[in-house]
Image (tube, rainbow, N blue to C red; front, side):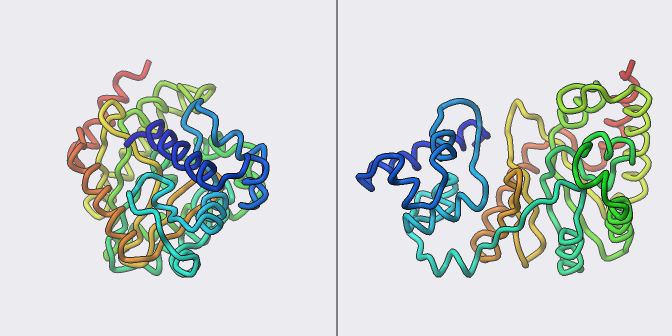
Length: 282
């Protein structure tokens, strides 16, 4: 299911909750403690807008349905609010690369395989120039220790017991290389250095680090990370939705396996793929 399909499913299920409640939008918004304008935006048929994690939990709690059902991950809608409280948590995202909590989750999963689908490609593989460009205006450029956190993540990856699998799209790399999308305005020299830095680090960390590249013409995935058997962190733009039930961990592990099967570039081909992209950079 791609982002647009996921958003469409969410809108249909949200509308069904409103219809079943017998309330108008304003009354439903009050009942669920959601801002009326936010509710109107979520019901809009435009684009792939998805709700914040706290909005999802508010809807699930007020309407006694599961977050998985709202997101289109299951056809089973019923869940008790006590289950929501025990298996789900919300953590705000600081808009800085690899905050301390993420590093702590990695430490807690030490000895287990960590599997991640990042927004683009992992922050610890990015150069300082690219990080500052991507996070310009955010906390990253105001916190002196941000680069230290990136180095801490890299140090964790260099430990022999570390095992990280990454699935991301080929387009995430090619768009950066071409300076397109959110990378527009990034200089050619910085983009070239990023590709060289990426290839150098990957060669050093492989096979403890294994990257699979899929193509957006075949599939799409929202960003998430499976931290061994401990938890799943689902990234929803401004916050993380943390899931720690066995069912959720298995669900997202299966989704990761599906992405691996659809990969057009295998881990042992990543360095050559980066070299090919670099050779085409004009």
